[in-house]
Amino acid sequence: MRITFFTPTLKLSGGNIVMFKYAEALAQNGHDVTVIAPHNEVLDKTENGINIKTFKKVPNKYFEHIFFQLIYIKKFYDLTPPSDIIIPIFFPLTIHAIYCKKHKKARKVIALFQDFKKMYWFGKYIYFLLRLKFITDKIDTFISVSTPSAEEIKKYSGREAVVIPNGIEHEYFYPRNEEKENYLLFVGSSSKMKGLKYFLETFDIVKKDFPDIKAKIISPDKITDNPDIEFVATEKDKNKLAKLYSNAIIYVSQSLGDSFGLPPLEAMACGTAVVMTDTVGSAEYAVNNVNAKIVPVQNPEKSAEAIAELLKNEDLRKSLENEGIKTAQKYKWETAIDKFKKEVERYNELNAQ
Image (spheres, rainbow, N blue to C red):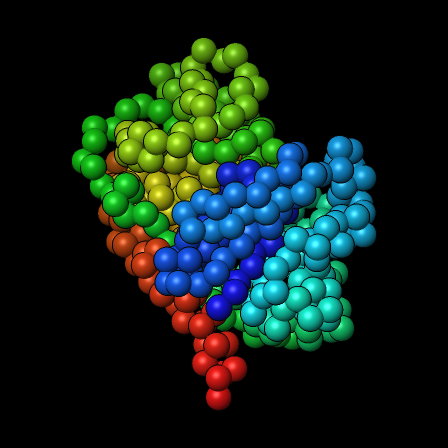
C-alpha cells in the first residue's frame, strides 16, 4: 500500500516519535511510506525506508498559525503522491487530508489523534473541529493513543476511536538498580505546555524544607542560572537518558496537557517514583498513590507537597517505584506497532473483497 503521513513539523516531539515508529514499521513491512511536513528548508530524501518531503514554511509564526489551513493546504496536496491512506498526526491536518481525498489523491483518511484541549490557542480550535460533522464524517478511522483521549473524541464528535496506547523502548528503559542520587528530574522544553516554569517554582518550594535537594532538567532551553539546577542538553543517547531517569530520586512532570505522556512512563520503567500532573493522558496508566502521585496542573504548592511526602516516606516511594515498573511493562512498542499495522492493513483487505 501507499501510505502518507502529514505532520506539522519535523522537530523531535512525542507525536513525531510515535509517527516515525509506525512509519518505519510499515516501510519494513513492504509499504510505500511518505512523510510530508512544512520545514525551514526544502527537503526531499529517504530515511529508514521513508520518503520525506517538505516545503518552505511561512516565516512569520503568527501568520502561519492563524492561516494554517489556507496557506498550506495546496502545498500538502501538491507534494502528496497517489495514496491509499493519508494519516494526519495533528488534527487540523485532517482538513488537508480530506482535501486530498476529495481530489482523488487518497482513498482513506485515518486520524492519528494525539492532541488535547490545552494545546496553546489551537487546542480550542481542535475541539471546535471535532464538533463539525461535515469534517469528522469524512474521516474513515480515528486512532487514539489513550482510552481517555478516545473518550474525548467520542464526547465531542460522536465517533468511536480505535485505542492503541504508545509503547516504551524496554531495551533502554528498564530498572538498572542504580543508586539513587538526591535530585529531581524534569524533561521538557521551556514551552508553556511542558510546565518548566511550574517545575522551577515547585523546586524553590521543596528547597526550603530540603536544602540539599538538587534538580536536573533535560531541555534544549536553559532559563535559570540557579547553581542547584543542572541543565542537560536534549539527550539523544537513550542509555544516558535512562541512567538519568534511574538515578533520580523522583521524576517530576508538570505538563499542562498530554494525550498520553511518554517521559513519566519511561521514568516508571526505570524504577523511579513519579509525581505528575492530572492530564488527559495520565489517566491511561497512572493511578494516584498506587504507581504515581498525581497533582493538579499549574499548582506548584501541591506538587511540592507530593514531592515532600515521597522524600519523607521511603516506603511509599519504594512502593510507587515497584508498581511503576509493573505498569510500564504493559506498554510495549511491539504490541502497539502490531495493532497499528493490522488497523492500517485492514483497509487493504476490505478493499480486496
